[in-house]
Image (cartoon, rainbow, N blue to C red):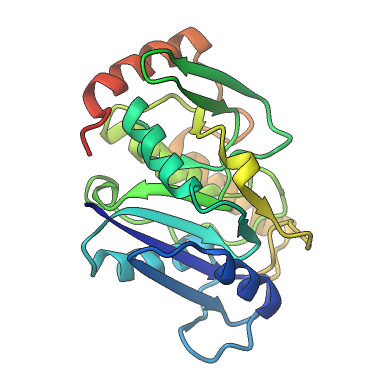
Length: 252
């Protein structure tokens, strides 16, 4: 059986981190990294000022293991039902969508049904960085997350390192077009977010000038801006999903 690794980035402080960690199911490997500005934990403290850097610490630890299925989560996450781990893997096996993020609860989405296996897939308009599911092989194809996107002031669409990685995924292997980001429908009921300040916690003070510069850097690299990325139609997305399903469904 292929192995599972979960990594937590602690950016909300000790209490949130412990609640998150205590909610995790038993899996093969669990890793964590602590932001030096938020945690009193004195082990594995990072001074990275970007989420890409924090995620990459976890990924490098994970790649030293034999884990195939990788889950990256922020410390505001509470796993209410441990079966959500299997839900992500089973949904990905059905549709071939091996990179997914938990959608925003207030985000628009489309529901796609697979009648053969009686499994559904949600396609969200935006990405999230709270809970990410991916394969270890994605690092081989796409490299690590971009560490250059430090804090920006925008809230919902500020996970530029995730959009950047998704763009590489779309370019290097066949994947769904931007604006149709996959998630298992079961994640909304089985994963909750702690009632704390859920805006992007500050790893470093950001200014408007810095935000403009970072978005400029992102656009130069990716040729799109979050909230302005949806150019494909739902029909285009479904056609692409059918191709992905044939290539990657139940193969990993």
